[in-house]
Image (cartoon, rainbow, N blue to C red):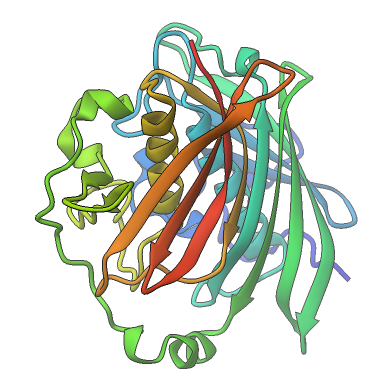
Length: 314
């Protein structure tokens, strides 16, 4: 049976009221963040059995997930989905913060019209979160499938689904074995030109040219304040998603393209001690006018992450 909102003071009392709230973000620790500027979820309400409503605020500006032209970054919305799932997991299902979350796959589809900015004002969204296939290990949650419907002004503007599992601290240490204390080292590879992947600063470029072979090398930048904002023993998921986006932009030759849909599969952790190769190729156009790009991230001779990203090319 689902545990309703944890009565302990993890969330300030005003965040447990019945009304929707947008003005104050939740404590960063509940969404695996360090700084409040990178937290975008603002409230959680229980609406039914395994059903929740999460309030979200898209900032008018952000150091990494900033808007392009008159549209918010669609990967900002995907980060909001991730945070909504963590918030529900920690607060509603009482998953201890020391547990580790493992993402197996994620799919998303966003309406570009729903990403429009509002000048210098933030944009308020509501995410309707439902949990399916909830499995437990004893009294603790072991895994589930999260489905999210994104609403703006009451209208659906996106959906997302992802499967994930979680393990205790000791189980994770055993799983990670010799990698449990791994730390990122800065890459000395020359990044691709920022303007080729829709970026301005080199620190935000996650791909480097390879001296031989197709594709690009994955760059690790441990000083990046958003991607590496807390201690982690492998390349984090948001770095993987951003690298896939940048590879798709390079393959399509369109740095201003907007990812509007995707299907990503995570098979293995990306480790810090071996090079990662990223390649992508255009696989065709859809009936909706988007360009599909297939990508693969390889490490140690195996596919660690693969999938398809659909781009709306200007």
